[in-house]
Image 1: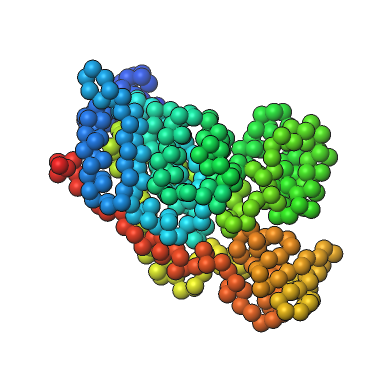
Image 2: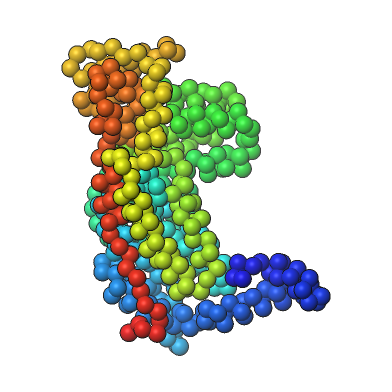
Length: 414
């Protein structure tokens, strides 16, 4: 069993054969067995360039770049970047201009890291765009990875893009260098972890921080920040050099139609490729390619069976907002403008024509907020007609209509 841990192997040997076996001996035995099953890592590195050639041949539009170090014995592998043609075309057709970036440890004897760039699809699901296996996660590897990605996605005007990171080594500086003017967000979950490491703990402080992060407008943001200060003045001072444009919805730009605060797209992708991190290099790359090949087909066929014009998760969000709209009292001001009074005493201005609300939720996401839905109910308008096109079934299918083509085994590679 490839997934069996060395400690479990020791227990099995002791139980079935009544033999004592050290952890290290069990680990080496597993490594030897896996080498016999999968072929040696050295053999896979030797055929990596052939793999890249076959991947480009079978999947037109695919970008594969390998960086090697010349040695006396030949070229030694250092890094490989992959962006599959079908996935790339789908991203350009469907996804909003937002990319999450993250790195994950490789658990083989050669070590290294897998870097990934992940977008958001029309159903608010993850959409892996590109991945790379590199020797380490640092400024130089991220610079190499993002330079190729920038060319791949034809990013000529960075100001229209959003990048979300977890403050990895060197990554923030690379994003600022390669994508000047782009919006840069940091995962709030990691921000909270950092504030805990700095010695500021407690559930009340955590809730206050998240209140400030979730605030869609400046007034609610100020309330959240004051709540942080009330809990800990030192934590409030610690937060002062963390620009809110990196971590609070109140300061996010509205062009991306995405209000994500955590880098869960990358975390989700990492969870799907956990097994790949234990495999030799070509098996590792093939595990990821096979996962994407199956995922593109699965998501496409699932959405074709969906009857609504708007994607399923988006329907759930709209229906939840419909329930909240019961607390709204709309007053028509004329044309497409409304004043929305709330039961709690707050008040908002709304324009159905320009699809804007002073709460900023609609502006940020492209989805009608509860205030907009109350006005729609007042006028007899279907709120689903006001959902941004990036959430529609037709948009989703454009992204998943492409295919990650199958490949033959090494024996048939040219």
